[in-house]
Length: 473
Image (tube, rainbow, N blue to C red; front, side, top):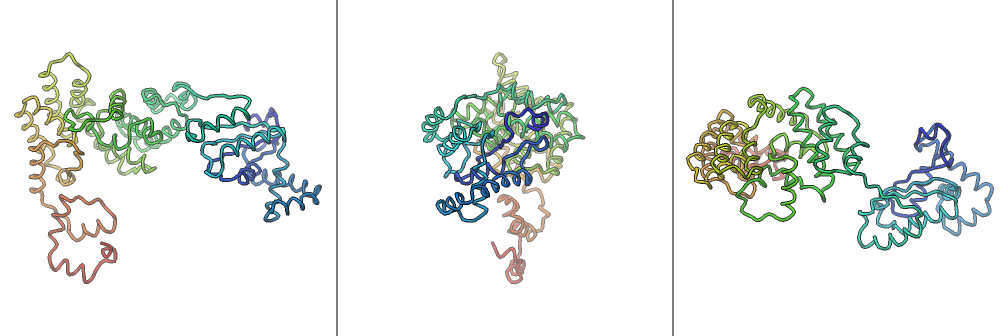
Protein backbone atom coordinates (compact mmCIF):
# COMPACT_ATOMS: atom_id res chain seq x y z
CA UNK A 1 0.00 0.00 0.00
CA UNK A 2 2.80 2.42 0.87
CA UNK A 3 4.41 1.97 -2.56
CA UNK A 4 1.12 2.68 -4.35
CA UNK A 5 0.56 5.69 -2.09
CA UNK A 6 3.96 7.19 -2.87
CA UNK A 7 3.38 7.18 -6.61
CA UNK A 8 -0.14 8.62 -6.18
CA UNK A 9 -1.93 5.66 -7.76
CA UNK A 10 -4.62 5.20 -5.12
CA UNK A 11 -8.13 5.33 -6.55
CA UNK A 12 -9.37 7.12 -3.42
CA UNK A 13 -7.64 9.59 -1.14
CA UNK A 14 -8.97 7.97 2.05
CA UNK A 15 -8.79 4.33 3.06
CA UNK A 16 -8.99 2.12 6.14
CA UNK A 17 -8.17 -1.47 7.07
CA UNK A 18 -10.40 -2.76 9.88
CA UNK A 19 -10.13 -6.11 11.67
CA UNK A 20 -13.43 -7.17 13.22
CA UNK A 21 -11.70 -9.60 15.57
CA UNK A 22 -13.31 -9.18 19.00
CA UNK A 23 -15.54 -6.20 18.12
CA UNK A 24 -18.94 -6.49 19.78
CA UNK A 25 -21.08 -3.62 18.47
CA UNK A 26 -21.69 -1.39 15.50
CA UNK A 27 -20.64 1.56 17.64
CA UNK A 28 -17.22 -0.04 18.20
CA UNK A 29 -16.96 -0.82 14.50
CA UNK A 30 -17.76 2.76 13.47
CA UNK A 31 -15.15 4.09 15.92
CA UNK A 32 -12.50 1.66 14.64
CA UNK A 33 -13.18 2.81 11.07
CA UNK A 34 -12.55 6.39 12.20
CA UNK A 35 -9.37 5.42 14.09
CA UNK A 36 -7.96 3.46 11.14
CA UNK A 37 -8.80 5.93 8.40
CA UNK A 38 -5.77 7.26 6.53
CA UNK A 39 -5.81 10.37 4.38
CA UNK A 40 -3.27 9.59 1.67
CA UNK A 41 -0.44 12.10 1.64
CA UNK A 42 2.31 10.00 0.10
CA UNK A 43 3.97 9.44 3.49
CA UNK A 44 1.98 7.18 5.76
CA UNK A 45 0.57 3.72 5.10
CA UNK A 46 -0.37 2.87 8.70
CA UNK A 47 -2.79 4.71 11.01
CA UNK A 48 -1.27 6.66 13.90
CA UNK A 49 -2.04 9.67 16.10
CA UNK A 50 -1.52 12.03 13.17
CA UNK A 51 -3.99 10.22 10.90
CA UNK A 52 -6.59 10.02 13.70
CA UNK A 53 -6.13 13.74 14.41
CA UNK A 54 -6.74 14.54 10.72
CA UNK A 55 -9.93 12.49 10.67
CA UNK A 56 -11.24 14.00 13.91
CA UNK A 57 -10.48 17.51 12.60
CA UNK A 58 -12.79 16.82 9.69
CA UNK A 59 -15.46 15.78 12.16
CA UNK A 60 -14.82 18.92 14.21
CA UNK A 61 -15.29 21.11 11.14
CA UNK A 62 -18.54 19.28 10.42
CA UNK A 63 -19.73 20.03 14.00
CA UNK A 64 -18.92 23.73 13.66
CA UNK A 65 -20.81 23.99 10.39
CA UNK A 66 -23.80 22.03 11.65
CA UNK A 67 -23.84 22.89 15.39
CA UNK A 68 -27.64 23.12 15.82
CA UNK A 69 -28.17 19.82 14.00
CA UNK A 70 -25.46 18.09 16.03
CA UNK A 71 -26.90 19.35 19.33
CA UNK A 72 -30.33 17.96 18.41
CA UNK A 73 -28.76 14.64 17.33
CA UNK A 74 -26.73 14.45 20.53
CA UNK A 75 -29.83 14.61 22.65
CA UNK A 76 -31.80 12.26 20.42
CA UNK A 77 -29.14 9.55 20.31
CA UNK A 78 -28.15 10.10 23.99
CA UNK A 79 -24.51 10.58 23.10
CA UNK A 80 -22.54 10.47 26.36
CA UNK A 81 -19.93 13.20 25.92
CA UNK A 82 -18.16 15.50 23.51
CA UNK A 83 -15.63 12.83 22.59
CA UNK A 84 -18.42 10.47 21.59
CA UNK A 85 -20.05 13.23 19.58
CA UNK A 86 -16.72 13.95 17.88
CA UNK A 87 -16.35 10.31 16.83
CA UNK A 88 -19.93 10.28 15.56
CA UNK A 89 -19.28 13.40 13.59
CA UNK A 90 -16.01 12.01 12.22
CA UNK A 91 -17.86 8.90 11.04
CA UNK A 92 -20.27 11.13 9.13
CA UNK A 93 -17.27 12.29 7.08
CA UNK A 94 -16.50 8.72 5.96
CA UNK A 95 -17.34 9.17 2.29
CA UNK A 96 -15.73 8.12 -0.98
CA UNK A 97 -13.40 5.91 0.98
CA UNK A 98 -11.87 2.47 0.45
CA UNK A 99 -12.60 0.28 3.49
CA UNK A 100 -11.39 -3.28 4.01
CA UNK A 101 -13.22 -5.36 6.63
CA UNK A 102 -11.15 -8.39 7.69
CA UNK A 103 -11.80 -11.31 10.08
CA UNK A 104 -15.57 -11.15 9.67
CA UNK A 105 -15.88 -14.70 11.00
CA UNK A 106 -14.03 -13.72 14.20
CA UNK A 107 -16.21 -10.77 15.21
CA UNK A 108 -17.57 -10.76 18.76
CA UNK A 109 -20.77 -12.64 19.49
CA UNK A 110 -22.79 -9.41 19.79
CA UNK A 111 -21.74 -8.14 16.37
CA UNK A 112 -23.51 -10.28 13.79
CA UNK A 113 -22.57 -10.71 10.16
CA UNK A 114 -25.89 -9.07 9.27
CA UNK A 115 -24.85 -5.95 11.22
CA UNK A 116 -21.57 -5.76 9.32
CA UNK A 117 -23.17 -6.39 5.93
CA UNK A 118 -25.82 -3.77 6.67
CA UNK A 119 -23.17 -1.17 7.51
CA UNK A 120 -21.15 -2.15 4.44
CA UNK A 121 -24.24 -1.77 2.25
CA UNK A 122 -24.98 1.67 3.70
CA UNK A 123 -21.42 2.88 3.16
CA UNK A 124 -21.45 1.64 -0.41
CA UNK A 125 -24.85 2.94 -1.44
CA UNK A 126 -25.11 6.17 0.59
CA UNK A 127 -21.50 7.22 1.09
CA UNK A 128 -19.96 6.19 -2.26
CA UNK A 129 -17.44 3.96 -0.49
CA UNK A 130 -15.72 0.93 -1.94
CA UNK A 131 -15.92 -2.02 0.44
CA UNK A 132 -13.78 -5.16 0.56
CA UNK A 133 -14.81 -8.06 2.83
CA UNK A 134 -12.17 -10.64 3.78
CA UNK A 135 -13.28 -13.75 5.62
CA UNK A 136 -12.84 -17.46 6.04
CA UNK A 137 -16.24 -18.64 4.90
CA UNK A 138 -15.73 -22.14 6.30
CA UNK A 139 -15.16 -20.73 9.80
CA UNK A 140 -18.68 -19.30 10.05
CA UNK A 141 -20.95 -21.43 12.21
CA UNK A 142 -23.47 -23.60 10.41
CA UNK A 143 -26.40 -21.85 12.07
CA UNK A 144 -25.30 -18.45 10.70
CA UNK A 145 -23.94 -19.60 7.35
CA UNK A 146 -27.27 -19.82 5.49
CA UNK A 147 -28.43 -16.33 6.52
CA UNK A 148 -24.98 -14.95 5.85
CA UNK A 149 -24.89 -16.35 2.32
CA UNK A 150 -28.37 -14.98 1.58
CA UNK A 151 -27.45 -11.44 2.67
CA UNK A 152 -23.99 -11.63 1.11
CA UNK A 153 -25.45 -12.18 -2.35
CA UNK A 154 -27.56 -9.02 -1.98
CA UNK A 155 -24.69 -6.85 -0.78
CA UNK A 156 -21.61 -8.08 -2.66
CA UNK A 157 -21.09 -7.42 -6.37
CA UNK A 158 -17.99 -9.55 -6.95
CA UNK A 159 -16.89 -12.76 -5.21
CA UNK A 160 -13.29 -13.92 -5.26
CA UNK A 161 -12.36 -17.24 -3.66
CA UNK A 162 -8.71 -17.36 -2.64
CA UNK A 163 -7.67 -21.01 -2.66
CA UNK A 164 -3.95 -21.18 -3.43
CA UNK A 165 -2.33 -24.50 -4.08
CA UNK A 166 0.50 -25.60 -1.84
CA UNK A 167 3.05 -24.52 -4.48
CA UNK A 168 1.40 -21.11 -4.83
CA UNK A 169 1.32 -20.59 -1.07
CA UNK A 170 5.01 -21.53 -0.82
CA UNK A 171 5.88 -19.14 -3.63
CA UNK A 172 4.24 -16.35 -1.64
CA UNK A 173 5.75 -17.33 1.73
CA UNK A 174 9.18 -18.87 1.19
CA UNK A 175 11.50 -17.15 -1.27
CA UNK A 176 14.92 -18.23 0.01
CA UNK A 177 17.23 -20.91 -1.39
CA UNK A 178 19.05 -21.75 1.83
CA UNK A 179 18.85 -25.11 3.63
CA UNK A 180 16.02 -24.11 5.96
CA UNK A 181 13.89 -22.74 3.10
CA UNK A 182 14.42 -25.89 1.06
CA UNK A 183 13.58 -28.16 3.99
CA UNK A 184 10.41 -26.21 4.77
CA UNK A 185 9.31 -26.36 1.14
CA UNK A 186 9.91 -30.10 0.91
CA UNK A 187 8.06 -30.90 4.15
CA UNK A 188 5.16 -28.51 3.56
CA UNK A 189 4.58 -30.11 0.16
CA UNK A 190 4.34 -33.57 1.70
CA UNK A 191 1.67 -32.32 4.13
CA UNK A 192 0.01 -30.17 1.43
CA UNK A 193 -0.28 -27.12 3.69
CA UNK A 194 -1.95 -24.25 1.81
CA UNK A 195 -2.63 -21.76 4.62
CA UNK A 196 -0.22 -18.85 4.20
CA UNK A 197 -0.38 -17.76 7.84
CA UNK A 198 0.43 -21.28 9.00
CA UNK A 199 3.43 -21.52 6.67
CA UNK A 200 4.77 -18.13 7.81
CA UNK A 201 4.47 -19.08 11.49
CA UNK A 202 6.21 -22.38 10.80
CA UNK A 203 9.00 -20.48 9.06
CA UNK A 204 9.45 -18.19 12.10
CA UNK A 205 9.77 -21.22 14.38
CA UNK A 206 12.19 -22.85 11.95
CA UNK A 207 14.38 -19.73 11.91
CA UNK A 208 14.50 -19.74 15.71
CA UNK A 209 15.59 -23.38 15.70
CA UNK A 210 18.19 -22.60 13.02
CA UNK A 211 19.80 -20.01 15.33
CA UNK A 212 19.85 -22.44 18.27
CA UNK A 213 21.32 -25.32 16.21
CA UNK A 214 23.72 -23.27 14.06
CA UNK A 215 26.78 -25.23 15.26
CA UNK A 216 25.32 -28.74 14.94
CA UNK A 217 25.47 -31.41 12.26
CA UNK A 218 23.20 -30.67 9.29
CA UNK A 219 21.30 -33.90 9.98
CA UNK A 220 20.34 -32.55 13.42
CA UNK A 221 19.00 -29.34 11.90
CA UNK A 222 17.11 -31.24 9.19
CA UNK A 223 15.40 -33.45 11.77
CA UNK A 224 14.52 -30.42 13.88
CA UNK A 225 13.05 -28.55 10.88
CA UNK A 226 11.04 -31.63 9.91
CA UNK A 227 9.57 -31.83 13.41
CA UNK A 228 8.88 -28.08 13.52
CA UNK A 229 6.87 -28.29 10.28
CA UNK A 230 4.88 -31.32 11.47
CA UNK A 231 4.27 -30.08 15.02
CA UNK A 232 3.55 -26.53 13.82
CA UNK A 233 0.93 -27.85 11.42
CA UNK A 234 -0.61 -30.03 14.16
CA UNK A 235 -0.73 -27.06 16.56
CA UNK A 236 -2.08 -24.47 14.11
CA UNK A 237 -4.47 -26.68 12.12
CA UNK A 238 -5.66 -29.31 14.61
CA UNK A 239 -8.71 -30.24 12.54
CA UNK A 240 -6.50 -31.35 9.62
CA UNK A 241 -3.45 -32.82 11.33
CA UNK A 242 -2.59 -35.54 13.87
CA UNK A 243 -2.88 -34.32 17.44
CA UNK A 244 0.23 -33.24 19.35
CA UNK A 245 -0.45 -36.07 21.81
CA UNK A 246 -0.41 -38.56 18.96
CA UNK A 247 2.99 -37.20 17.88
CA UNK A 248 4.26 -37.35 21.46
CA UNK A 249 3.44 -41.05 21.62
CA UNK A 250 6.55 -41.97 19.63
CA UNK A 251 6.24 -45.30 17.83
CA UNK A 252 3.08 -46.31 19.67
CA UNK A 253 1.11 -46.17 16.43
CA UNK A 254 3.80 -48.25 14.67
CA UNK A 255 3.76 -51.04 17.24
CA UNK A 256 2.26 -54.15 15.58
CA UNK A 257 0.86 -55.31 18.93
CA UNK A 258 -1.50 -52.49 19.80
CA UNK A 259 -4.21 -54.20 21.80
CA UNK A 260 -6.99 -51.73 21.16
CA UNK A 261 -8.51 -51.11 17.78
CA UNK A 262 -7.51 -47.77 16.31
CA UNK A 263 -10.11 -45.36 14.97
CA UNK A 264 -10.46 -44.34 11.34
CA UNK A 265 -9.04 -40.95 12.31
CA UNK A 266 -5.95 -42.53 13.86
CA UNK A 267 -5.53 -44.66 10.76
CA UNK A 268 -5.56 -41.47 8.68
CA UNK A 269 -2.88 -40.01 10.95
CA UNK A 270 -0.78 -43.16 10.58
CA UNK A 271 -0.94 -42.81 6.81
CA UNK A 272 0.11 -39.16 7.01
CA UNK A 273 3.10 -39.92 9.24
CA UNK A 274 4.11 -42.86 7.08
CA UNK A 275 4.09 -40.65 3.98
CA UNK A 276 6.04 -38.02 5.92
CA UNK A 277 8.65 -40.63 6.90
CA UNK A 278 8.05 -39.91 10.57
CA UNK A 279 8.64 -43.17 12.42
CA UNK A 280 10.03 -42.09 15.75
CA UNK A 281 9.65 -39.34 18.36
CA UNK A 282 12.95 -38.97 20.18
CA UNK A 283 13.86 -36.55 22.98
CA UNK A 284 14.67 -33.67 20.59
CA UNK A 285 11.39 -34.16 18.72
CA UNK A 286 9.47 -34.25 21.99
CA UNK A 287 11.12 -31.06 23.22
CA UNK A 288 10.25 -29.27 19.97
CA UNK A 289 6.63 -30.50 20.12
CA UNK A 290 6.29 -29.32 23.71
CA UNK A 291 7.97 -25.99 22.91
CA UNK A 292 5.54 -25.26 20.10
CA UNK A 293 2.59 -26.11 22.34
CA UNK A 294 3.73 -23.58 25.01
CA UNK A 295 4.91 -20.90 22.58
CA UNK A 296 8.69 -20.73 23.10
CA UNK A 297 11.84 -22.81 22.74
CA UNK A 298 13.91 -23.70 25.79
CA UNK A 299 17.37 -23.26 24.26
CA UNK A 300 19.12 -25.18 27.02
CA UNK A 301 16.91 -28.25 26.59
CA UNK A 302 17.00 -28.07 22.79
CA UNK A 303 20.81 -28.06 22.86
CA UNK A 304 20.94 -30.85 25.44
CA UNK A 305 18.92 -33.21 23.25
CA UNK A 306 20.63 -31.97 20.09
CA UNK A 307 23.98 -32.90 21.67
CA UNK A 308 22.70 -36.44 22.21
CA UNK A 309 21.35 -36.72 18.67
CA UNK A 310 24.57 -35.29 17.27
CA UNK A 311 26.54 -37.91 19.21
CA UNK A 312 24.32 -40.70 17.91
CA UNK A 313 24.66 -39.50 14.32
CA UNK A 314 28.44 -39.34 14.56
CA UNK A 315 28.56 -42.73 16.29
CA UNK A 316 26.44 -44.44 13.67
CA UNK A 317 28.01 -42.66 10.69
CA UNK A 318 24.73 -40.97 9.87
CA UNK A 319 22.75 -44.23 9.44
CA UNK A 320 20.08 -45.85 11.60
CA UNK A 321 19.72 -49.52 10.78
CA UNK A 322 17.06 -49.97 13.48
CA UNK A 323 14.70 -47.43 11.89
CA UNK A 324 15.56 -48.85 8.47
CA UNK A 325 14.44 -52.28 9.65
CA UNK A 326 11.06 -50.93 10.74
CA UNK A 327 10.66 -49.24 7.34
CA UNK A 328 11.56 -52.53 5.69
CA UNK A 329 8.79 -54.25 7.63
CA UNK A 330 6.16 -51.66 6.68
CA UNK A 331 7.18 -50.91 3.11
CA UNK A 332 8.35 -54.19 1.63
CA UNK A 333 5.95 -57.11 1.24
CA UNK A 334 8.29 -59.23 -0.87
CA UNK A 335 10.86 -60.03 1.84
CA UNK A 336 10.42 -63.14 3.97
CA UNK A 337 9.91 -62.95 7.73
CA UNK A 338 13.40 -64.20 8.66
CA UNK A 339 15.12 -61.44 6.69
CA UNK A 340 13.01 -58.75 8.34
CA UNK A 341 13.46 -60.22 11.82
CA UNK A 342 17.23 -60.50 11.37
CA UNK A 343 17.38 -56.89 10.18
CA UNK A 344 15.36 -55.73 13.20
CA UNK A 345 17.48 -57.65 15.71
CA UNK A 346 20.80 -56.61 14.18
CA UNK A 347 19.64 -53.01 13.84
CA UNK A 348 18.65 -52.94 17.50
CA UNK A 349 22.02 -54.41 18.60
CA UNK A 350 23.87 -51.77 16.56
CA UNK A 351 21.88 -48.87 18.05
CA UNK A 352 21.23 -49.90 21.65
CA UNK A 353 22.39 -46.61 23.13
CA UNK A 354 20.24 -44.60 20.75
CA UNK A 355 16.89 -46.40 21.06
CA UNK A 356 14.27 -45.07 23.47
CA UNK A 357 12.57 -47.65 25.75
CA UNK A 358 9.16 -47.63 24.03
CA UNK A 359 10.84 -48.56 20.73
CA UNK A 360 13.05 -51.31 22.14
CA UNK A 361 9.94 -52.69 23.84
CA UNK A 362 8.14 -52.89 20.47
CA UNK A 363 11.12 -54.70 18.91
CA UNK A 364 11.35 -57.22 21.77
CA UNK A 365 7.63 -58.03 21.60
CA UNK A 366 7.86 -58.34 17.83
CA UNK A 367 10.69 -60.87 18.10
CA UNK A 368 8.77 -62.91 20.70
CA UNK A 369 5.70 -63.08 18.48
CA UNK A 370 7.76 -64.89 15.84
CA UNK A 371 9.34 -67.30 18.38
CA UNK A 372 12.66 -65.45 18.60
CA UNK A 373 12.66 -65.55 22.41
CA UNK A 374 16.41 -66.04 22.76
CA UNK A 375 17.10 -62.99 20.62
CA UNK A 376 14.47 -61.00 22.53
CA UNK A 377 16.00 -61.94 25.91
CA UNK A 378 19.49 -61.17 24.64
CA UNK A 379 18.22 -57.77 23.50
CA UNK A 380 16.84 -57.08 26.99
CA UNK A 381 20.17 -57.95 28.58
CA UNK A 382 22.29 -55.95 26.15
CA UNK A 383 19.94 -52.94 26.36
CA UNK A 384 20.28 -52.83 30.16
CA UNK A 385 24.06 -53.18 29.97
CA UNK A 386 24.31 -50.47 27.30
CA UNK A 387 22.60 -47.93 29.56
CA UNK A 388 24.09 -49.00 32.91
CA UNK A 389 26.81 -46.36 32.73
CA UNK A 390 24.08 -43.70 32.89
CA UNK A 391 22.21 -44.30 36.20
CA UNK A 392 19.75 -41.47 35.61
CA UNK A 393 18.49 -43.29 32.51
CA UNK A 394 16.71 -45.90 34.63
CA UNK A 395 15.65 -43.56 37.44
CA UNK A 396 13.72 -41.45 34.93
CA UNK A 397 11.77 -44.38 33.47
CA UNK A 398 8.15 -44.90 34.49
CA UNK A 399 5.40 -47.26 33.28
CA UNK A 400 3.56 -44.27 31.80
CA UNK A 401 6.19 -43.81 29.12
CA UNK A 402 5.01 -47.04 27.49
CA UNK A 403 1.57 -45.44 27.10
CA UNK A 404 -1.33 -47.93 27.07
CA UNK A 405 0.49 -50.61 25.14
CA UNK A 406 1.80 -54.02 26.14
CA UNK A 407 5.12 -53.99 27.97
CA UNK A 408 7.45 -56.96 27.76
CA UNK A 409 7.54 -58.62 31.19
CA UNK A 410 11.26 -59.45 31.06
CA UNK A 411 12.20 -55.90 30.07
CA UNK A 412 9.93 -54.52 32.79
CA UNK A 413 11.53 -56.76 35.44
CA UNK A 414 15.05 -55.89 34.25
CA UNK A 415 14.35 -52.14 34.48
CA UNK A 416 12.85 -52.59 37.98
CA UNK A 417 15.89 -54.59 39.12
CA UNK A 418 18.22 -51.92 37.77
CA UNK A 419 16.34 -49.23 39.68
CA UNK A 420 16.73 -51.25 42.89
CA UNK A 421 20.45 -51.58 42.23
CA UNK A 422 20.91 -47.84 41.88
CA UNK A 423 21.62 -45.94 45.09
CA UNK A 424 19.53 -42.77 45.10
CA UNK A 425 21.92 -40.15 46.47
CA UNK A 426 19.30 -37.40 46.57
CA UNK A 427 18.29 -35.89 49.91
CA UNK A 428 14.67 -37.02 50.48
CA UNK A 429 13.70 -33.81 52.32
CA UNK A 430 15.15 -31.63 49.57
CA UNK A 431 13.33 -33.70 46.95
CA UNK A 432 10.06 -33.20 48.85
CA UNK A 433 10.70 -29.47 48.88
CA UNK A 434 11.38 -29.49 45.14
CA UNK A 435 8.05 -31.19 44.47
CA UNK A 436 6.09 -28.66 46.54
CA UNK A 437 8.04 -25.48 45.73
CA UNK A 438 8.68 -25.89 42.02
CA UNK A 439 5.81 -28.20 41.09
CA UNK A 440 8.50 -30.45 39.63
CA UNK A 441 7.41 -33.76 38.15
CA UNK A 442 6.47 -36.48 40.63
CA UNK A 443 7.62 -40.01 39.74
CA UNK A 444 5.77 -42.42 42.05
CA UNK A 445 8.08 -45.37 41.38
CA UNK A 446 11.16 -43.42 42.58
CA UNK A 447 9.99 -40.48 44.65
CA UNK A 448 7.78 -42.51 46.99
CA UNK A 449 10.69 -44.85 47.77
CA UNK A 450 13.02 -41.88 48.33
CA UNK A 451 10.60 -39.87 50.49
CA UNK A 452 9.85 -42.97 52.59
CA UNK A 453 13.46 -42.73 53.79
CA UNK A 454 12.69 -39.57 55.77
CA UNK A 455 13.21 -40.44 59.44
CA UNK A 456 10.86 -39.72 62.33
CA UNK A 457 13.05 -36.82 63.40
CA UNK A 458 13.03 -35.51 59.86
CA UNK A 459 9.21 -35.44 59.76
CA UNK A 460 9.10 -33.79 63.20
CA UNK A 461 11.49 -31.15 61.96
CA UNK A 462 9.29 -30.48 58.93
CA UNK A 463 6.10 -30.30 61.01
CA UNK A 464 7.34 -28.09 63.82
CA UNK A 465 9.66 -25.88 61.79
CA UNK A 466 7.78 -26.06 58.50
CA UNK A 467 8.91 -24.49 55.29
CA UNK A 468 6.20 -21.99 54.36
CA UNK A 469 5.73 -23.69 51.00
CA UNK A 470 5.35 -27.16 52.51
CA UNK A 471 2.24 -26.06 54.41
CA UNK A 472 0.35 -26.24 51.11
CA UNK A 473 0.70 -30.03 50.96
